Length: 308
Length: 290
Image (cartoon, each protein chain N blue to C red):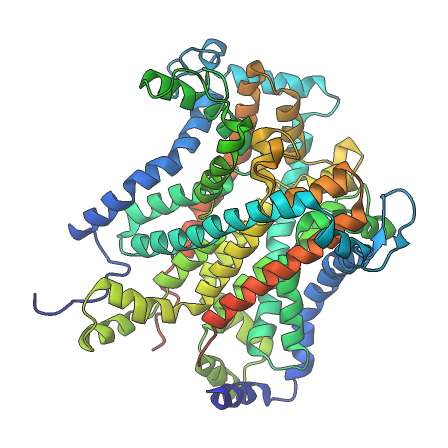
């Protein structure tokens, strides 16, 4: 398996120009990538070993930030980490599976209904920022003019309006719902494109070979042929899940969220970096977050590794 | 039933069995659609409907009041809204086209060409897309400052041109282009450049369309560059302006203006998606090669 891969690659790579020409194709990207992404990233990682209040020059403190994070940050251990894990366990796999199943279902429709439904499912990812705040805040508004309160009261389910967005019990579930609502993003589009681009003769061959129903077909044909898109979708789901902190803060209107009810790692980073101005500590938390995301995406890479 | 027919994927025409699927996803679709409908309705509500009790979901007497208010507010500030629109337009077009060119070219190299640092570059690229953006905000500000890009259009454009997510996406699709096809072209004497334009680009249209949408979304709503790298009002973007409006109009009365702003920011997304969805669901890419 490994040998055949190298064999195939060498055939393409055998031509002498390959090395030079590859760098020519890469050069413009690499220059910008290094300047605006890698250099800032390296600075951020270096800052994690310093004490930096954004005004004075950073002073080197070694691993102190990391030690503090693991041993003294009660809020992190007591609220942020458990909330993030709970949130990630539901939104990550939930959003990913939902994206795949919807993409798979839509691929079985003819063009017009498919286009309309794809637009609908993708549209929440388009309504980022401004739109989301306006919309969900009004729906979950805490007084009786809020849509949800008004509906529930009219149906007689509740008598008093519930202050949804400031209630410790409801904030995290609401954040999870909103996150799932907007999880049909670019991963969903990539998977939809992947399913639709599969070679049709494969499906015909599979039917002849005794594939019995559409679930077998999905498992034995669809998923293996679109592994690159499955991996992309998985990495996007992991990254999106762990890097999302906007929803809770925007909905409750405060960072930290009330009683740390929906405090995710990203909120913790923002809290330290831009409210307490402890940039060094915030950088250390981001490096830890990078480690978490990287580990999960390695696992998903194992699952969808190309076996060619 | 005498065996499974197979190939439900991408049917050519509407058949009865598709109704089952539509019915299955319909409740979810309505739930997802609700907020969009709401944005449209809310933006056209007159004052008394915004305040109505019990609140109304749909607009009954649509009005353009919110939009007039929004334009009046922009007329009062020193800079006409057309300026922000122009800035956003220029920045968005350059970033979308530029990032597609960069990610397809480098995706081609990383997927199909052979060279020493290939795996290292891929690994670093993937790591970069996993690093949380807030952490690099200040270091990036420093970089832009050192390069002397503050207060220029380049401060909006350059940091977004190299898009790790887009490269990752495009590379995944190029991986699926059969090596045999490329080898055949090389045997016929094609150069790398020719292979890139004549084989790779036409075969990864869905990826290009997807990353165009992705790039558009990142740059269109991007307020970071206007907030941090640009202090000259005349160089700021529409997203920044709309955000300020929404933020300063946080009362119920301002909800109408904020909703109108949200709608204005949302519609270009919608239009672009409708234009590009045909290429995303482009199923012709694999025809002609078996």
